[in-house]
Image (cartoon, rainbow, N blue to C red; front, side, top):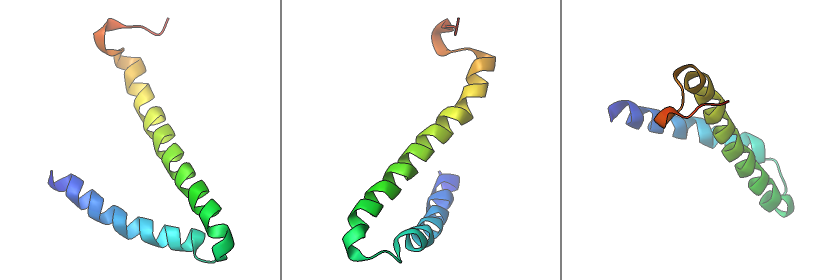
Length: 70
């Protein structure tokens, strides 16, 4: 539990400056669309990163329940 709490606190220090750098200089009229696009890319990047990070171990160990890729 403690490593997750530490990682969560550290993430807050990384996310806020990134958002400010990305969206801070935009005019208010464009901020709504830019915020939407920024969040979409953040979520997609996390999902793709998890998928690619998990794929090699699954291919080596096999899928749960004995399923195969062939």
